[in-house]
Amino acid sequence: MNIEIKISKKPIEYTKAIAFLEERLVKLKNFEADELIWILEHPEIYTAGISYKNKEILDKNIKIINTNRGGKITWHGPGQIICYFVIDLNKRNRDIRKFILKLEKIIIETLKEYKIKSFSDRKNIGIWVNHKNKIKKIGAIGIKVKNWIAYHGFSININNELKFYKKIIPCGINNREIINLKNIKNQKYDSFKKVIIKNFIKYLKV
Image (cartoon, rainbow, N blue to C red; front, top):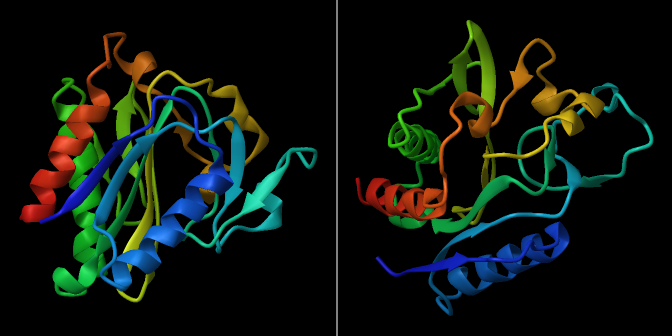
């Protein structure tokens, strides 16, 4: 299993990152490159997936970039880790549902290593925690599949500002809040990126 691992230290512009993923997808399809796992952060930006609705934009002054991933509107920015990937499902029985379950497992198992219990929700895609008796979102997932190659990725809030989510209805869910790991448990998350990669490779093999 040949997978290139990238960890970017400086924030990567959203449009540049997506262009890189699209290019890698073509190369992978043509057997000119390996699969990819890429950990990074973005400068502050709002992005909208293919199923978003205009009413989910609460502040009409914000700039939104439309993207071809699944899902609705979300925010990316400093303090939030993004895990992008380009993974060939042709090698994995072309099973999109199973792949999404693996992504959920990767996030849940990563958080477990930091003594944080989280869970998935079949009705509301993403990863959730029960914080002070309220269900709050800690991780978002948005993927696209083209030629049976899955790309885009998932995000996990580490110590990002949460005020930016008040300008939108994040992921179209208006009755649940967003949270970050620092608010749940104030501890060091320096090794978080490496733990994600370790679990990603582990669960791809299963």
